[in-house]
Length: 362
Image (cartoon, helix red, strand yellow):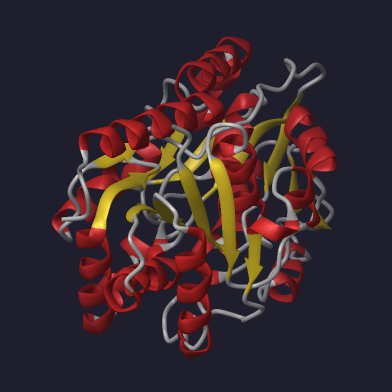
């Protein structure tokens, strides 16, 4: 029997589209989007199997507009009769799924997927959000996490079975040729949580004794103007290039050129961008977070920077001397542990097993 599964999330997100592509052909797929749908959904999901709520949710909570759509969602789900609801980002879409079962009589199981701040940030900031997250996790027959660290947090909040796999790559890119030994790349959002000013400071410290060092900063955000002003100061002038938001092909070109990759957020689970960089043979320099230590052993296949650490070029030299070996090892790890299609296949097999055994929400 083919399972009928409804994705619930932000249909304009490339990440939800990636899940849809991986699930296509493995389940009878339907989708509810809190906003609209990316055009890429046309290739994997007919319009008749999609419901766009056209809201503008705040994923930190307080999503009254989204909750007002609950009666519409309940009517749509009851007409479909799904086996599984698969909400992505538990603070918002997980709440919608939980309420559909609790208040709307929808007879389905929930497989909830945590994305990061819905577990690592929201329940810590607010007692109501903690209570809500606990209710959603308790309603899940299965949950997924992209790091062991976040899975532990989920279990502490009341989750039962949690599958752990990174939000990995759909395909391994070709081996990069022509790496530039002194080129650094960063592409996290230019927002406070990603600490982009620290990225500039760390690069400045490394580049102080390395005249050839250059940094390319992709993406955009509220701090861009301040960062560009910082990059104009004497220690960085002419050495930092801001390239804005990039399409996938252009971003891949920068990964292929750069020897080093900088990602220094204040809070994070396993980052897709870090996995991409590793697959392209970039040596990562990461902030000291538990999920980052699941990927990088400091000094062996990358650098984990302590809070406030301002590294010098000497810190990088042992890795630079065996850069090709390190890059090959990073790619091999991705191939073995972070190929998304393989992970989703295992996820669907688990849903089928739970369905066969009759295990429902707790």
